[in-house]
Image 1: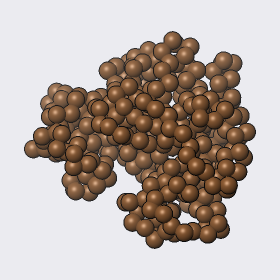
Image 2: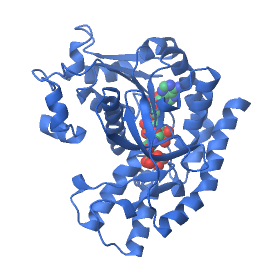
Image 3: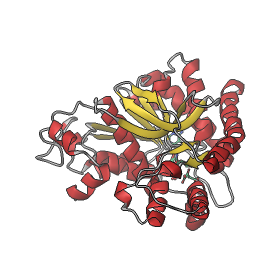
Image 4: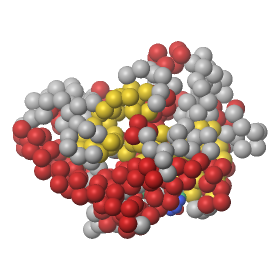
Length: 356
Ligand SMILES: NC(=O)C1=CN([C@@H]2O[C@H](COP(=O)(O)OP(=O)(O)OC[C@H]3O[C@@H](n4cnc5c(N)ncnc54)[C@H](O)[C@@H]3O)[C@@H](O)[C@H]2O)C=CC1
Ligand SMILES: O=C([O-])CC(=O)C(=O)O
């Protein structure tokens, strides 16, 4: 069990050495600082497995699970798992606490280091992510109002779709509350990277654990731009194969939505991706050097105000937004084609906050 989780969370030998005891009982993370992680939407399809994975993360000392219903049950369930956070709260709540409804959101959020937001409705077949805007924009707006009031210094990991609009919505709400810090707001695009790695490994005949592929742009359809020309290990793949890999990465979410046939969108792979990303944020906060992940953030590497690219994470959140590097002609074309759709999704998010 510990070996499986260890490989999932990929702690380096150096980090392990940095904490004298770090896993299940007998391996706690004494040297790691206390960190509170809050999940808003914790009882949902993503929220539940994400709660499980965060409970398994030895960097988390306190896990706060918030939703409009059902979180006490989720908290009681994962709270029985004998991992680190049990040591940091009372014997009764085992380091995990469930909060329900607006009257409890203050307590849920206070003191959070990282707030992960998978609250909102998922797609059904035939819908685009933008079709979720009508419902999810309002949910995200109200949750970010609460974050602005009760945990304004937390790193926000935005999962709720459409990410291309919900991140700008969050930025505007934080600005209106006078607490916006662009270093602390991150749209989670890790699932695009996870997919690109998986699909590339298959075609390149590479060990998937060794594969690296940056994915830039945004998180919907053609705005998802995997940079296979920068993939490692290198493989000599034809244009047709690279085109097919790009399409499959862009349509990965739809592939799952269709396979689930009305029962939602990616939840398990998203929980995995969300857990990897939150783990990277925690490592950055804890001062681990050279933590680099792709994320959708405020950016000036293109003319668009938000853009997904590699970012270096550190003690204050985003330390540096990294450039795109060299692009192939095909990727350069993809970059030009995605800009107008991404711009209109960003603008839609921004104007929603000012109209509402
Ligand atoms: N960024 C990404 O790569 C991905 C994003 N998503 C998005 O994540 C979101 C959640 O997906 P699922 O977990 O499958 O949906 P779900 O419907 O299973 O769960 C959503 C949860 O949010 C809760 N919720 C609704 N309003 C809330 C509020 N005001 N405060 C707190 N919680 C609230 C619901 O009660 C529910 O438990 C969707 O918008 C989906 O499109 C999904 C997969 C990948
Ligand atoms: O496709 C969806 O609706 C959910 C999502 O963002 C993904 O799986 O990438």
